[in-house]
Image (cartoon, rainbow, N blue to C red; front, side):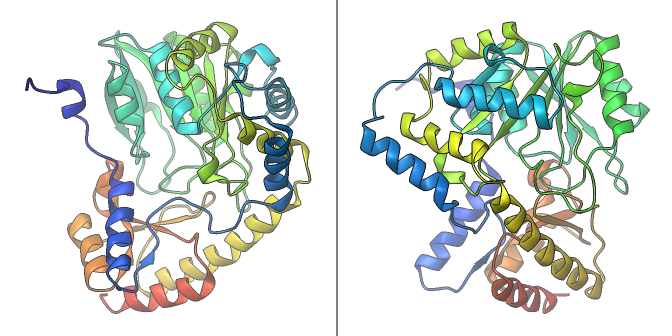
Length: 377
């Protein structure tokens, strides 16, 4: 048989998924593994969202839907973006996809031509670079400051005549840091000065502790050159629903829709009615989950300090991103194989010397996990 795709052969598997699957294999073999490695809320999807999906199934909403999403959901997204994110938006500037990851991939396909460069701010989520590579682009990594995790003028050094896109993520996975207004303005200025597109992943925008979320698409001059990506997985505990969306100019959304038409067609029809209920229904469920995450955050960060570990600004998401001495991959593997606690090493995020600890687990499990980790320090 002839060799398979050389393009895909050069792309690494998802480190976070590999670690989680290893932990699951250990659990299946009878080992009591505490998994703090994956970005998944441990809460059930709120009942009113689930019921909306069930009602849709009972009504027979099991057939093809419009390619960019059912009108009710597209309209709800446009209204949410205008009201909450302060980005002017109409229904024809919205596309609903199979999760935020799908929207990010489609955005890369829509914007990048072979040889184009996309700047990624490190530490960075594991799938940005593969999405860029699959689209034929080249990922250019730029490290953020290891203390502030903010953007500075050194970003300009990575801009070339091949640069087409800057990918930002706020709040950040893995660090939990939130980009300040100054950092976002710097990115916006660079994008406008060099005719670039900003791809802004804002999936954790609702999970914030004492800070404020800003969307770069709301900055002056950025409406037409920003692709804002969001979804339902984190804020509404809907990871398995695979439902996300993107908002941008009509032209960019049109190109993304071409990708969608020839790949997924559209998201699962009845799941989209759950998305409508999420956006239009009561929002107290978000605050209840956020408040519980905040309690867990305080507990985990306190334990990290007691262990003598420093951490990144944990102002958003549900991660404690801690600095370690030695090979981070070896340390994470030791914690898993000997301590039976699954975490993700910083090298997976192009940032060696750090470890991501998710506190999306019950307090009982977090207490036991911290006890096990402290045994190795």
